[in-house]
Length: 342
Image (cartoon, rainbow, N blue to C red):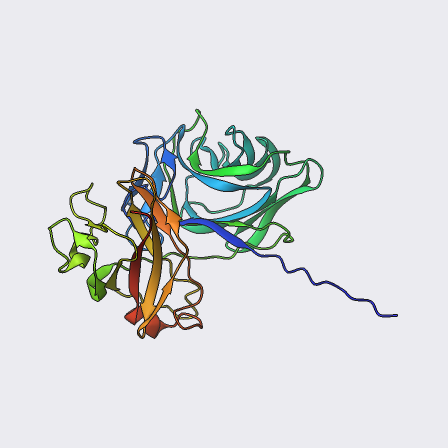
């Protein structure tokens, strides 16, 4: 008798990341304006972080519905005052499902449906530290695991709710709270089918256009296609003053980039081209990619709306295959490609 086993390989899927390096809050779906904001006052990586300025001040990001997810981020906190929820997975009605919570004594808590499940009073949050939250929402067999700089510090198993996670809120959701908190290097993954595990510590460095690339086919707001990189390198973005645009499908533009230096023991897991884009018609789309050693790697078509929004394409493999090395980061071009119907 022969017995065959089917191996099921689960996939961890990136849902969102935000490094604040655009210099505004466009990486979020929305925010409580103007009290959740990008700032240079404190930063973990690069020049910016996000800050909330007290009670009921936060940003949130809409996510594809899931029952299992993890979030990793760096937090610079306070131990005085009552801050409340700082990282919260929510359902479609904005109900709190799972939260990382700072209480009035400065202790950090995990909560399910806004009910305390575990607490850790001994964490130094007066400097940058990494927090990870791994959760499964289930009416019986749910879990929450919290990690501080990669080490498990709190956990709970049992009832965590019975609704899909559809967004994540960063900042203080509560009306009570009076302290300033900072957040940087945020990412959210769908972990459906995975077992609980320590949330990896990741940072998001930013490189920007600094020269012409191989393609110069989009039109610039200055009326030509010369030195287009000068029209897309402003941080923060300049509110529709300078830009590039395509008037037809299958049109490429690309830009040489500044570089970033990998530190000792660091590796580049992915390069993530990002744009802020909108459409003027009904069916235009955009695709993002990279170019290296005369080889293009273009991502999937993405539908864009009539208002400016944030789009990204996470590329783990470089053009031609293989992992990203320092020399690749030095030489890469970012490519934008018009698609859809014009």
